[in-house]
Length: 140
Length: 140
Image (cartoon, rainbow over all chains, first blue to last red; front, side, top):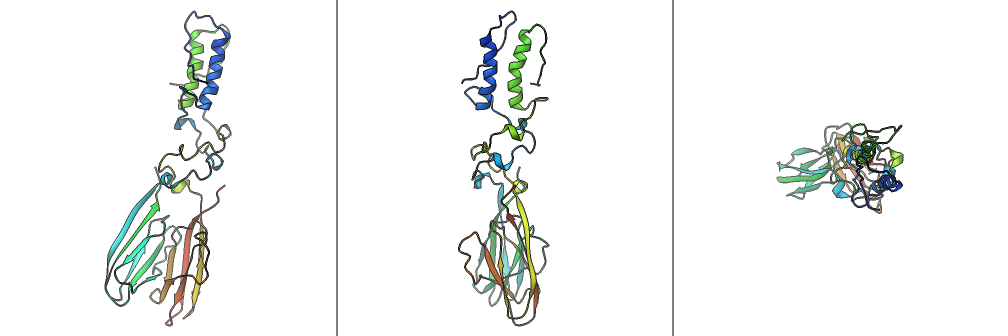
């Protein structure tokens, strides 16, 4: 039903239709009917939106707070460079100009999965490298 | 506007009834004093993709867990590393790292739901390795 939004006037005789309209407006607001005020962010109790309230597959890519970043440089023969990614990094784009550059573990322990990392070593030739990736940010 | 929340007694006035009508709007807006919507008042699946704002889901909104795999690699041996489904890029560490290569896994995981790789140690020295990663859980 359409939202009514009754404003009562002084001296107005009160009929059941007026009060029923107020009552119906409660339902109209809950149903999001035409003209009814929308539920605003501040009206939800903190933490009230639990997983059950979020529809399946509703959190698509565009809903994720992400950012892109990259690191690049050059490697001399035999040189190893450690690459430290941001927390919650997706699989990176790893490019090197010489195919004999190898992918290795990082020499420093990051301590947890919150500090993802690996390293690159130029084995037989100088190489330039670029590592670019997307990661989930802290959001807004 | 501020929530009024009157308890009526005696003769009704136009102002009282108009306030009652206005409180529906105040509740929708989350105005000061208005009751907040709690979990039980929200329909399951009410929040579909259209309702979730872009970039609203950040790290703290994700249900994550951490996992680790560590050990010692003898010379000329490999270790297969299988990550959890929905794994973020791992922290790959070894000490020393100059003899260890990150390589493909020797068992087909069948799909991206079983992410994996392996570490191969060379003939020079044994090495300690540590693989930590974060992954999305099935939630609560």
